[in-house]
Image (cartoon, rainbow, N blue to C red; front, side, top):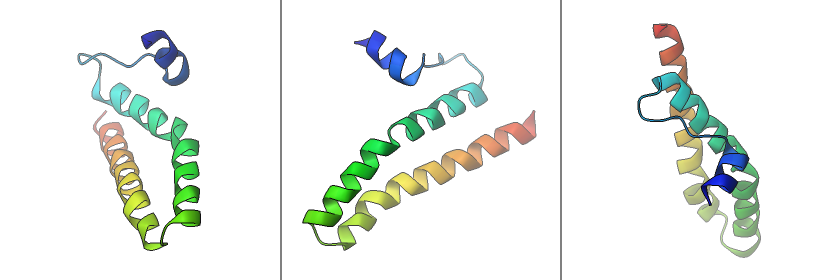
Length: 78
């Protein structure tokens, strides 16, 4: 199972890896799951009330924005 995960998302950096490497890997994970998330949002829009899109999409967007800010902070520290 790890082999399939590693092929799709790349090898996850270990805990002793530099923080920037771990953050960049996690950002790539976010982006590679984006199509599945968008599909989920389309299903929500089609079959559920529109306000639920905010409930589904907002945590993802906030997490991605926070991750981007942390990456920028780590790059400035180097």
